[in-house]
Length: 358
Image (tube, rainbow, N blue to C red; front, side, top):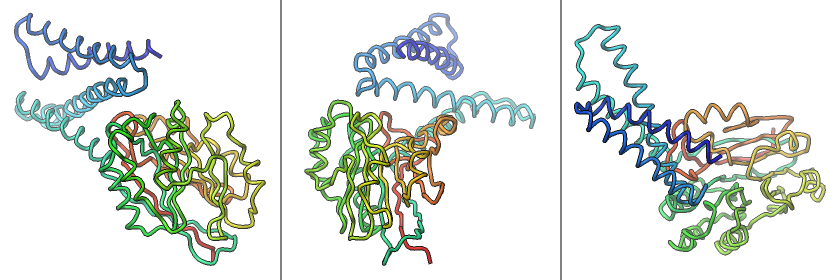
């Protein structure tokens, strides 16, 4: 894995140097050499810094630097396409300064859009019909992958609480990856005071995700519980004597129970909502009388081209799909994890209305 990032970093050095060389147009050899050396040093210092805390906070800084350079490549490709159309096909006068200005504008636009998508959530709505008896509709607010941490904290929690309150849900569920690996920033910035404002008439429930199982699972579960949120660890709860909510731990949990085991303890003649972090169990769940399956984890790919590539490996990357009378919903997430960017996806909350079919 380390070798992959070392090779990737040197490729970024090459492509970034070429793009900056084109943009700056250094004339002297010493200027050209200085540009390449500067890019090489910055990238490899970032890599060394990141590898000292692999896949944790320091590595996230490296990822941010790398993705910003990736966006530079996107901007360069778009600029080349525009230049080809404008100067090549339309035969307009060649204006190098204009095309460089367009390149800068495109780059700023890509970065701005990626940050906007990460921090400006949208609310989606879904109605799910069940053939099981249900006297009145049940409204559920779903948020997943909040990844509370360095770049996602109190302001985003307050926004989530406000958006969910506006939906007037009967209950709220959080589909894992509540925190970004640890409780350090949660405790440091007193996020408890803000998360504890998340309330609903039938309660707020959560399951833990893979980022909640990196050594801090007990601390995270305790912090979430202290905020008034019920953590369902391979457990079920009967809501309003009408609907079962089943919560299962993440795939990495060695004590994780099978769907068969969990569902055998409840009366599935009543509507069943199954909550877990990942959508990897679709083939398992579809054979059981589950009305609604809620998950997250995928981030919808988060950043292009992963938004497309993930579709080759995941049964459902983002959105909804009805299989064997079970409605599956995979949220792309409210937070973003390691890097504060979304390109091709957007932060989201889902409001689901479960009601009896007429």
